[in-house]
Amino acid sequence: MDLLDYPTLLKRLREGLPQEILESSRFKVPKVDSFIEGNRTFIKNFREICDILARPEASVLKYIARELATAGSMEGSTAVFQGKFTRDVLDNLVERYTQLYVICPICKRPDSEIIKQDRYQFLVCKACGARTPVKPY
Ligand SMILES: [Zn+2]
Image (cartoon, rainbow, N blue to C red):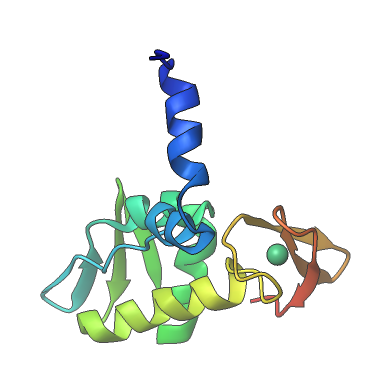
């Protein structure tokens, strides 16, 4: 019997799996872990969410604050918004951001980046190479 080194083993294992399972297991946006204190709402796992989305915290923060029509700031790895917002509302916004600014509309994969060109912004997919105009915010 052949002894396989770990990378080879992993490769063989992956080849046996349908692509969809690989994609969904690799990319899973966590639910918002939030709480309300006084008149402010805190998202404790904000940095973790941005890391998984591979987007700058400032950029995601700006989008969510704009959608909530309020002010947002970072306190360490926590996002803070003025006003009281439920988890459902915040989860929905993270989901919408992911669909609009992370997931490639052509191949549905999350390996992408936002490129700014003059007044325009594009979602450039690293998987299939598609270049999709996205609305700046
Ligand atoms: Zn793509």
